[in-house]
Amino acid sequence: MRFGDPIMARVLTQVIGVPYAEAARPIGTVRSRVARARTQLVSSWTAA
Image (cartoon, rainbow, N blue to C red; front, side, top):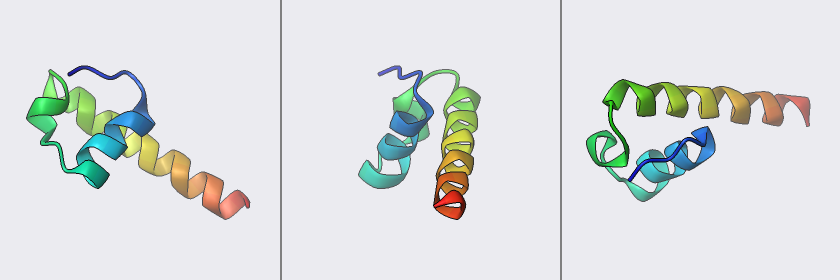
């Protein structure tokens, strides 16, 4: 599976539990997308 959306990467790896290695290649790409999604979520929570 390959997903370019950071939120999708976060949902797959953190909510559903899909291992990083299965979510996309290279693995660093998924980790950076998950980190980016985390930052976006925190920003949206603090702005609300």
